[in-house]
Length: 362
Ligand code: IPM
Ligand code: MN
Image 1 (cartoon, helix red, strand yellow):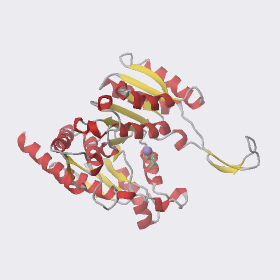
Image 2 (spheres, helix red, strand yellow):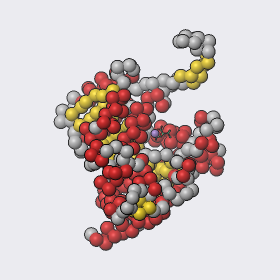
Image 3 (cartoon, helix red, strand yellow):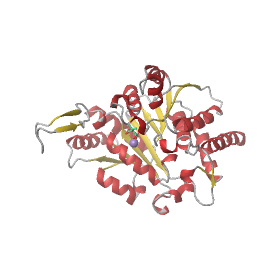
Image 4 (cartoon, protein in one colour):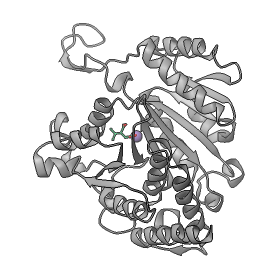
């Protein structure tokens, strides 16, 4: 099993190192090869997604990704900015289905900014369509306005679009995921304003006919943003487009106390995938050894489950994470009175120890 390891920028290198450490104690035949991506690749090779990195990702069975981005690249032309690496990988590998679970761990109920009773036991799954929508729609650019409020002035524009097959396949993914959970799908749209999302709603409704055992509700995105903080536990699976999913998944992540806890998987039609923490490169805390590696470690577990077909190994990692939380170990982002503050590396070491202890206990 070959894994392409792409650490990227900022805290990416620190958290990936801990996940790699955990993977190495599993006694699985994993071949890991590292390549630069994002700003790091721009520095090394002049491009955020060099040919060699893309090739490695395409040849591997799965990609473990850290994070990309740094303010210092904000002035570069768009095609050379670090973010283009992750967008390019998603497109080139056909990773259209993005799973972003938001799970509130029992020990972290009090780390949430919401009242504990609103988030205790929270377990929702946001499924974000990842290769369409306004992120990739053409045409886009700048031009001189010919109409609108200020004809003759400079303007910028993007194109929101979805094709029927794109909506159908993500709807199937959502209904099938719901079958393994509480059998409820909330499809989030803006059908009251946008043609693209009226179409989304119509197609999702059509696909639903094949899943009579799953409940489907439709919700406007503004209301969904509100309901997520009002009564998040009413959701089970949320399926939505690329941009709404970007925004709502950050919101959902925060319900759980820290975005530093949340893994994600981006899958193609054969369940080949890219696995990354839901958080970004956090350049403000990079190099300080305080980043939370658990989201990345849990992403490695998702990788073992979805792409490498090693559910037992995945479960061992997940149990080890539970164990270190139960021991009271916390990185700064999830620290609270009465728990023990640890560094990125200490957290990784503790998970390694817990994986080993779990093995000898069984
Ligand atoms: C994410 C990120 C990316 C996105 C950026 C870095 C391009 O915010 O994975 O959610 O907008 O998709
Ligand atoms: Mn985002």
